[in-house]
Each structure stands twice: as structure tokens, then as C-alpha cells.
Length: 375
Image 1: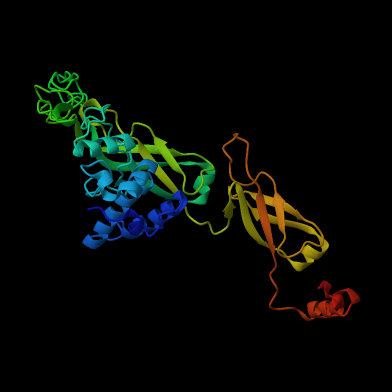
Image 2: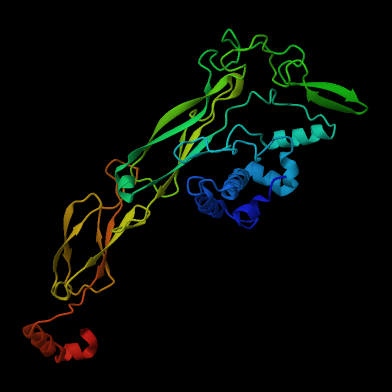
């Protein structure tokens, strides 16, 4: 029996998608096998977290669970401990993620009704001939990489279409003929009183097609495990938590079905020099008191390591922010479109003064303006 996905992720039933995603990222990093080598308890927790997120991130699966509980996924129609989380198929820390190729709400209800002896019709056909499962990886990059854009290479092993049979599972490399008994639906019907009961077709075992001679390379499945490498281009200006999708780069489907998709979640490390607010960047600059009082210029470093001279107006206060247009993050709208850079004004008080400096400051402190709190 699956554990309550809300309890596994530690979120309320009315949690938003963002709350669910945050909880998932926190837990999956905590229990990741690479961080807990040989820890069977952490491995099980890792599986539970992925299983729970697989349900709650999908609106249809979440709605089905909220209404039917574990019964919504009876018979393999949803996330389960055996739905692809039995190991870590990525060699570099990524993991298999059963996002695609699953049953929709109509399939869940149809299968549930079949179990009670009702015929809803409109079956999707061969249950084993659906699209391959999606794959998910996560990468953590620096803010500078997010500014310029970068490429992340993922090395992993997954199911791909068999080279010998082109994914059809047949000895001749051609699509298997439609099963004549079930007409390609994968089910046969029988009347029981007032109801029509559907059961998997005994001739094709629910596939919807019948393979007379199997491919010897893949034993008729149409897919085999293979080491793969994907270069994922991360665009300039990408935001923390963004998800990139590569259509058709996921796990191969069975018997010629389409492949799933590949997803990459992008996380951005905190930067020592810059904070980010959307497309804008914020940095701190320590400015001498005399420059703040009299005005002048300061030199700052931008995120692309350029030196920039910025004018400081006379009378600038500590805590104010100076705005420099066009030196923030790329917005992605146009090649020349950037956010702004804000300079948070701070001041460093000297710990040692010369006698001359002390005399000047003492004389200033005795002036009328200073006594009114100007300094």
C-alpha cells in the first residue's frame, strides 16, 4: 500500500504546487542515495518521496488520490513503489521519474469500473504499448552561469528503442499486426447478466497486437538499456527552480510507442556578491562618508566581471539604493534586454584616525548642523 503522499512530503492537503515542489526538493536532496551511500532507510525514504511527488505534482493523479485514496492506483494506474523508483538509473546522481506514460483520469475510472464488472467503453487499447516514462535530472549552477547561459551534460542509462527491430519487438523490424481477436483494444468482452465485463485479451496478453516472432535482441519488448549522454542547453537569464523539457528524450516506449520526455530542474547557488530579484541584481558597496556627503564616483564590479564607474550624488544616505540600468540579468525577451543593477549603499567607519583627522571631525561635530543631528 502506498503511503499518504501528503504525509510523506509533510504538506497539507490544500498545499499549493509551489509548496509541494519546495518540500519535494528539500527531501529528495536529504535522502538522495549519493548523500547516503549504503543507507537502506534513506533509500526507501527516497523512493517514497519520489512516489509521493509523482502523485501530487500531477493534477489528475492528485485529484484521483484525493477522491479514492490508494484505490485510485490499483492495478498499476499511477505512481507506486514499482513504477520506476526501484533504483538510481543515472550514474551521476539523477533519477528516474515516472511523469509520463501513465493513466489519465478516464483510464483510472475505466479500470476501477472494470474491476466492479462495468463496461465504460472507449478503452485506450494496449496497456503495454503506451509512451515511455519521462526522466528527470536536477542541476545546481552558479548565478554567473545563469547570466551567460551554459550547457549541462547528463550521463545515464535508460531504455532506448532496440536498434535491431526499430522498437517494434518483431524479428523483421516491422510493426506487429493488430490482434484479430480484440481488434487492437487489448481487451475482450463477455456478458454477465446486465453487465459487460472486459478482461485482457488472451491471444495478445492485452498488447493489442500479436508478435509471432520476437526480436532476439530485445526479446520482443522493443527496448533495451543503453548508456546515454544528453547535452542540455540552459538559456541565459534562467530563474531558480525552472524546469527545462526535451521532448522525446526520455525512456523508450514499448513495441514502437513514443518515447517519454526528459526534464531538467535548474537550481541556482546563492552568490556572494549579488542577490537576485527577478531580472534585477542587488549588490552592496561601502562608500566613504566624504563621498556620500560631497558626492563623487565609486567603482563597482558587475556580474560579468566588468568595472563600472557609478556617480554618487551629494547627500546620499546609508541604506539608499543607486540604480544602474541594464546591468542586471538577461530577461529573454530580446537579446539586448536586461534587468537593472541596484547598489545598496553602506559605510565603513574607520577604526583608526590621525590626530589631524580627529581635529577636523571634532571641529565639524561642534558646528550647528552637526549638533542638529546632520552627522
